[in-house]
Length: 158
Ligand code: DQA
Image 1 (cartoon, protein in one colour):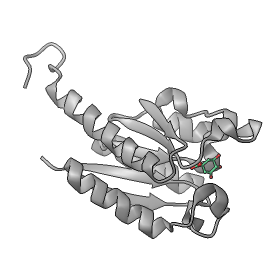
Image 2 (image 1 turned 45 degrees about the horizontal axis):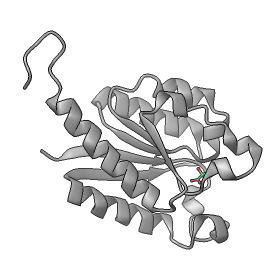
Image 3 (image 1 turned 45 degrees about the vertical axis):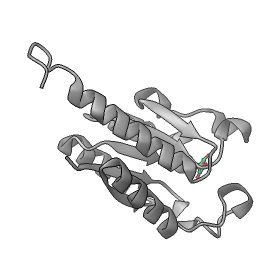
């Protein structure tokens, strides 16, 4: 079964390749999207990669994922550190959620040390450049497989 996955990216990640390349590398968002799609194919995942600078649009995509029970890999970018609205939207999730970062926020400025979304994610992958996204997709595939093997509450295993 091919599983749909959303890879959502927050503000300024559309500038990958030109944005502080010493931190975020020289690969564009289009290249990142292709890497995610090809990694997904190998894992049996159909990956839809989106980016927005707009908090409201990002929250709309999170609602869409919750309604469709779609797993999400999310790089919330700067929203990581202060968006309670995004955190509350993610708390309604109905499928696996992995937070991802290209850089390692824990090794950077102190304002980046807080993630207001980490507590509502299954886990976080940070600091491995674009490999962070590949690891996050692996985690989603593993979590989805586990969920399929798990018995229905009060019922027999499928
Ligand atoms: C980031 C880290 C955030 O602190 C920053 O605001 C970003 C990118 C990362 O991928 O390393 O925009 O999420």
